[in-house]
Length: 231
Image: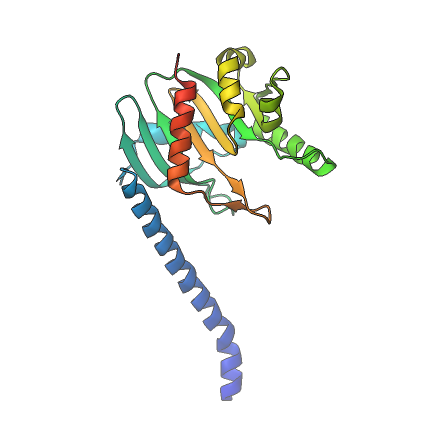
């Protein structure tokens, strides 16, 4: 076998190996950055997450058809009346990188939340935006009822809400809470009982999700907690 033939054969394998190494180094660097970011916000690493908490977080995603979910990169911070858990959520059966990349779970005994989900609508008035929002409604609602609030147009234009029991969701989302939520953007919330999961996703110019710093996610989760706590 000539040298050129050997190089032609080995070349693709070499490039593949370099790509694997580069991805591994990039993931390791991201994990280190994520850890520094969490420590800087007063969080502590949790090596073995509480099984009950994992079960509750996974249950919040059951309506999306996701059941075999795994928590990774878990950090915890305890407050006077709540606990914050910063985490990544992965679906091992999906090609997606993460279901959540830096979401915040908020647990408080002062919460009494109906089972509901809140997601940002696709902005715009055109056919594409309308079609995208119909798909979003179908995907989010699976087995649930969409809850609309036409009496609050700013909120209704910005967010989609689905829930297990519409009257309970309506009773919880009072005028004050709807007005407060209408003043936010890009929030995604999955809630039930004394727990909700908060995520914050912005779209880059190419309509791809851009990662939001952990501080913004934590600040958003704490703001949501204040909106949801009883008055």
